[in-house]
Length: 503
Image (cartoon, rainbow, N blue to C red; front, side, top):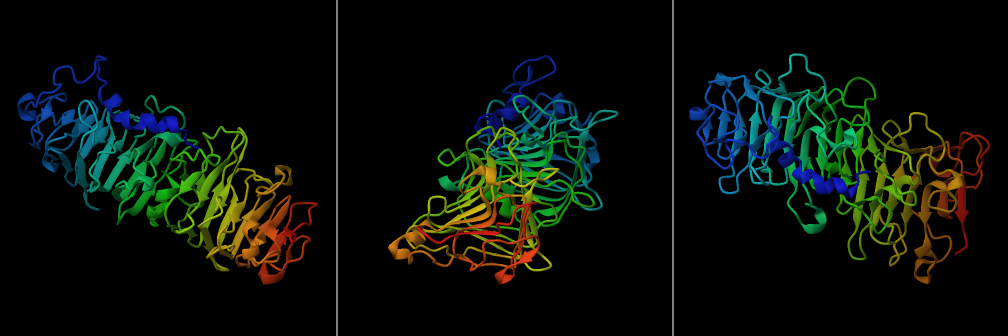
């Protein structure tokens, strides 16, 4: 999972890139701070006064400090240096007309919401048409993946910015300090910085629609920060390839509800949505902390809890769904869907933890016979115990599980018995501690409904917790219990349900 050190570096990325030049200087050597007329200068390092770029060479200025339009009549345009669109006073908008092609040199990029020396307000309106798409690509004669930087929306980018009916090719060049994994940088990058639901910040949700993103040097589209996501009406995305270790889309769990359902990533099962920890939960392991109600839409590829940068050998990665004594937070997973969990190389386990603080968390995963919700391992060769399973705690005050329910869900390869005591010894664990209190009715208190679910390849138990399902305790292969639940344990294991009847 993503390290907090990345958060500190990302907002300065466009500045680091933007301040580089062919002679190794800082800000542009002959244009820093000046508002030189583009038509008079005709160069890439002057400032733009506004209007349109002169067709003489069609070179885009490095610093766009006032409204600027790239016209189809002057296309193609070239960016020999990073293009920074931003100014604290003018709040410039770069408009790109349908049919315009822009080629970028190696080391160049298009950075929205970035001034000459620091982040500054700026916007992008790049709206093509189906017949005349906008093309953003490399200037190399024979380009390869990651030949130029890409399109960056910085924290000060105008949230009404739009990129639609466009093609982004050969982007995703890996710049220092983001050299960790392809997860860290995408051909399109939306950085909300420290904006968070916890601080009542304004989300940075960018409208991205009818896009083809290909020949990626990293991931396809990356959202950084819990409040970075897709704007309304986003969709019709085609992301055909990405670097090894990357994803077509990377997003924080808190913005996964903005994902569009119209997504193409090739035939068959191609990649997944990388769910990456953007907000460190230092109090409870390293899980991503969900802090508002979410419904994850049904999409054609899996949600994948990424563990590529998770190095804490003692904690668990994944997601926490936790409310308060007075307010609930619910994660609803629409059907059909597949949710996969990586296995951290350095130790620890990935899972979903609900009401970890014994209050207010809910999870709803109700599929149908033809459209199930699947929870499984992300390993190429899965094995029992690859992930920690789902732990659901009862509320300390009400001693119940609220609206939590599972129907037609499949659980596979979770909860090896070697993980010891729960959580981690079963694929689905219900902690009924509150039900043991006098106000909770004592032992035998009913838990949430679990019906027509399938449990496979577990080495410990399929379900553990209170005596809440009225199930037997041992099942052989492909045995159906009460409530339509089917149990197929790993070889040699017959423990289907481990019931806990004593507090």
